[in-house]
Length: 212
Length: 213
Ligand SMILES: Nc1ncnc2c1ncn2[C@@H]1O[C@H](COP(=O)(O)OP(=O)(O)OP(=O)(O)O)[C@@H](O)[C@H]1O
Ligand SMILES: [Mg+2]
Image (cartoon, rainbow over all chains, first blue to last red; front, side):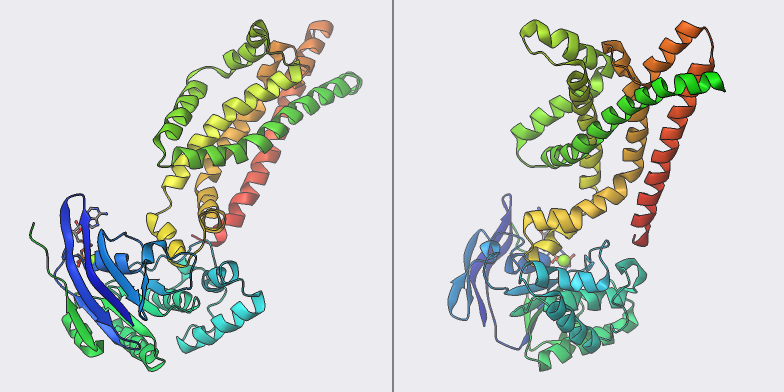
């Protein structure tokens, strides 16, 4: 379970996140919604340690933790970026196995074996040796998901997972997210698509623009 | 033909010197250029200021002046190099500045998202640089590095002024002694051969990086 207590974030003197309190229970899907510019991405970046919150506390399974300085500890938060950010110089398989090998010190064999199991689950069989530029948007996203999962995160975060895809692929993303939920993955999804949010969310969290 | 065979050994030994200067400059300047390129993109302002000054100085003055300065100038303040070391030192100083500037541009063209993506996968800074950033930078900078490398082959003839027996000097000596154009023409052919080989190797490297976009 992840709790955020009184998280605030300012850019220079502009208040973006003002006293955010929220809880994500194990295995649930939390959707963060709100208008453009409200700070949804900023909140996700604070949770995943890419931005430093100005104040407040993160509590994971009852233990206080600091995502911004969590780099040497256990893998906690996985991220699927809006534009995926696959590594263009690495094949699909290398994208997925690089961090497990270099950070978790897995053997080549184990890393590849585990990658293949997840790739099969997300319909990526046979794509191992392709480079990101050879993939469709949906395939890139699935590689990004497998790459994040390969680090065994406790929570998987997505920023606008439907925005870079054709509208008819929305269904596919829903299916993937719900499938991962069945496997007890805790997920946080930022979206401005209310219908999508309602289809997948156990809870909605509304971020509203702070007026300052 | 007989004449060519007669002067060829001295030309080839001159070409050997040219290649030595070329080789050492490349081997030291490129890695050093990467490191300084990283420094130029760092957030630590005093460092970038010093590096920018260095690049400005090296690119803003003639290599010939730098060469003369190192070999004839520095001894005046007690720093003495032999000819060969002076040449290598000046070339490394000069070319590192050009390479650093090329790598700075390359580094800045790697999107911030790539670093963030590596960060959430908990790769360390150096793992990220080595496995993600450098391959992407290399792909971007190959054409500009290639230009500099070819320039270097030709620039190496400047060591002539500090009395090093390179290819150009060997040709010049033979022409003056035997009053014929042949040695100079031969020198031209040897330079063309060297640049052709380098161009071929660069093409190979470039095509190796064409497997991804
Ligand atoms: N690095 C930054 N420096 C300064 N201001 C920033 C920075 N990043 C975001 N902001 C500002 O913070 C506010 C919230 O941005 P954020 O990207 O979190 O919004 P969002 O809710 O994700 O919007 P959208 O739905 O358009 O993606 C915006 O006003 C933005 O201009
Ligand atoms: Mg956003």
